Length: 537
Image (cartoon, rainbow, N blue to C red; front, side, top):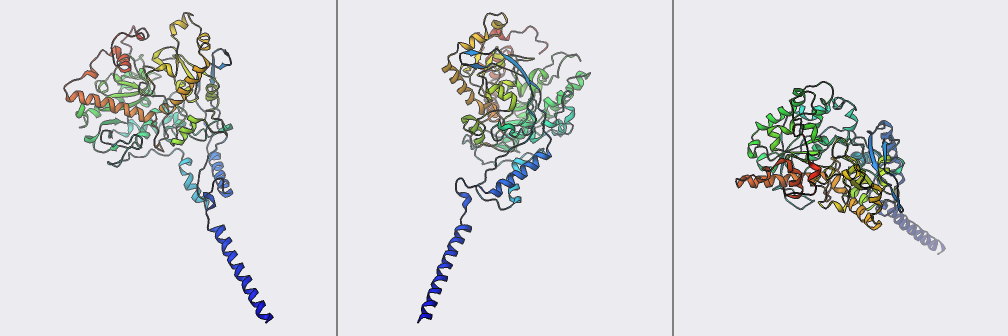
């Protein structure tokens, strides 16, 4: 009897043991604990750190370009004197990447695949991708019907082949370092934790042609059928072409050769005859004056691209346009920030990153971020890149002529300039009729706060997204530029069908007024745009 009881007890023990074993086995190995908030595997973090350290060790730190920036600090009730600070971005001592992964990464190979978009460096420019003809645009919910863009086919010597000899693109600086990452330049990483997590690059102000071309390859509504196209994009790197010959003893024939040949090629293509070039557009990634040589003298500056009859019909996008000509439109200078997702933009707008407190690129951005007002006087020309760097930092731009922004970036900045900036007439400053300090110190603190809020809202409008990614809902500088071109071409197309040509027939001298206000009537800004020599420009 005792043996029977003992046997039964043992059987129950092993049964209970077996049930508990199965329970704990399923609990430990059958449940995905990584899906719970706050759970991060040590292995994943270690492997990510290892890969990142290998990448950092293999890439030499970039040396950012020199630029001059002017800022005005507005502390308490006093304002410090305006200071000019010539700075360099710090060389990269290390990079930090944030890897977001909802699942446990089983091995190093899987993690590398996950991190591939972040680890790409100096990748070759891809071929043009034909998009699905029925694809919907996620940003606006619009179909491609009136948004198709055809990319004109021109010899590669007018674009990508130039990059093979990038050391010759600028006499004063080796441009090769700035052409990596599809034109974004070297990744700035996150040294000293002064940046937001990602999206910051040492971008050269003259790299817009490469950057825009690569963004165009990701455009939702590309087509290989030019008859469907609402506009035709010409991938000619006009700025890089002319920059090779701006200095030394190159004659006008050498400087003009590329532009003249491209114009000839375009004119002979069947799509040109659709609107005789009025539906064509291109990027000239330098200021307009580099392409408007009005006299045939070797000592004169630039080439005559924008004065060619073919170019007069096209829409040319530049980082600074002419107030007195109708065929070029300004779009923002490339900045340091190139988001790869909507969240990158939202993080910068909301400034909720508690780890780095939303500081911006090293010395330059620190200077702007610590200031309430950033002075933007004219330099060699009307505009300066620091206008857009200051906007990224939430610093209120102070202009001294409407030619520095208001009549330039009509597709990207609000018409009501008083909402985001301050205008102090340059003549009043020059004649000492006003004090910059006094003008700014009289602005109420509540108004300063409102101005800064409006400046921060402009950030999406003035940044170009990473060409290797696509933003889902945020419209950035590229999107607004394309939208502006399409609307302009649509107006001209309708006019041509009606036998009219209003948008192309007006006194070019008042182009700035027509495109900014839609009128040629007298304006209080007329005195800013009087010029004595029309032959030079």
